[in-house]
Image 1 (cartoon, rainbow, N blue to C red):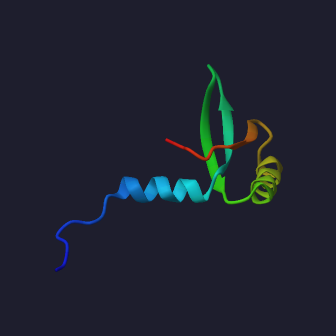
Image 2: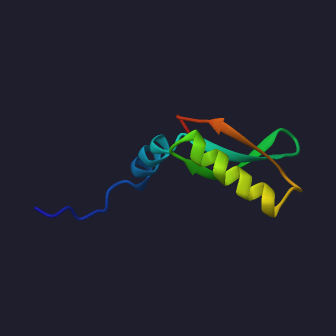
Length: 70
């Protein structure tokens, strides 16, 4: 039997987020943050962060471990 509906996309998104627990976030005013990218390893996140700083030093970025992203 072929299902008539596509699988729930939210379930797939949370599983994908768990595969990429290291995030680079841009720190914004009023204690807010914006996720720039997600990575499987801290090393990958650090390399991406170096590239971000080469292109733009006007923003403040940080690396966070966020295994349970919402």
